Image (cartoon, rainbow, N blue to C red):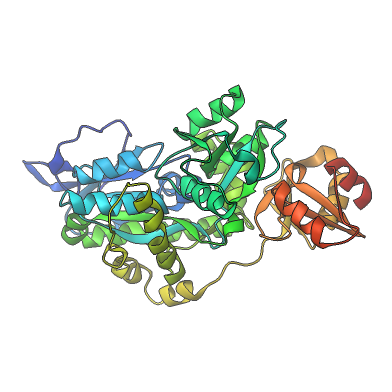
Length: 447
């Protein structure tokens, strides 16, 4: 029988239960539909979603199974992880991808409803927490989290961005429940509220902070990497699906590994593909997913990430969103270990390289690295009409940011970038003679 794999549209939410991870129709036992829930605009999941879909690697892996089945892949796109979890626990999605806090909700909900799920691989992560950022309006007078006391802040309760906000406020001495007025909003709603002036700040996950900054609609107030706590996105699968179709899950994870290799080898091309599929500016996608982007992509389930997940449980419990979550039983890396084979141990031990200053020139299919932010500024000053985007790592956290949106500090001959005003001021306070300067001033000094 000639084997085929068909990618279905995202519209088929009403597929019968038997069509997901099982027979497509009662009379057609050779056809299996695999339903994948993903978040196209949550771009740190692209190796299990947007990029993977565009490359067609999963379909290719399924074609290579030669097990007598014809496979259909139903890709379903969602704005957040919550509806993916709802569909998974209803038996309508087999494999999903989402951030760390939604993964815990996925685990809790699956166990509660007798539809257990498991974390089977990781997509994008940042070991310091830089994937989440608190932003405020471009003309706001706020300079630190302490300025948020009594203010209105939009976030998505139950998300990693809310977790960052809660922890950051606690460290700043502000009660996250009583010290601010928190609005639970979808990212797009919160972004609109910030632009309209109906909220004072927005705490969100990738790619919203970078997008709003790039568009000139927001500026960073707090870099999530200041927490120095890992944050990540991962892949979750229904337990019954994994047991019934282990080779299909392994095929997905092999395809994810291929997509990861593609992203790491061709970061500009990958950013362009994701931008085309999502409508996000490629410059914003590259900020997070580029060669030195805020996210590192690696399918291995690292112990540091599992440990961070365990710490996240307390935040969700305090918000009364979950009870106890058995993280150890939720994590199941047996499938990704088998899918990656001998390379798994190497990936498990790998650590992210330090971020570097980087320029993306117009009409170029590659970027150029610079040894220092000052060297980047000198180049940009001489080629301003030719620059598509310039990126620099925060001098203390390493979080990549747009050079023209960073807070710059002059310290003697050194020019140092920071994502947020508070970290810049902390550096200035600790280094006599250092002072903040404008971006244009920094360009002038570098040239």
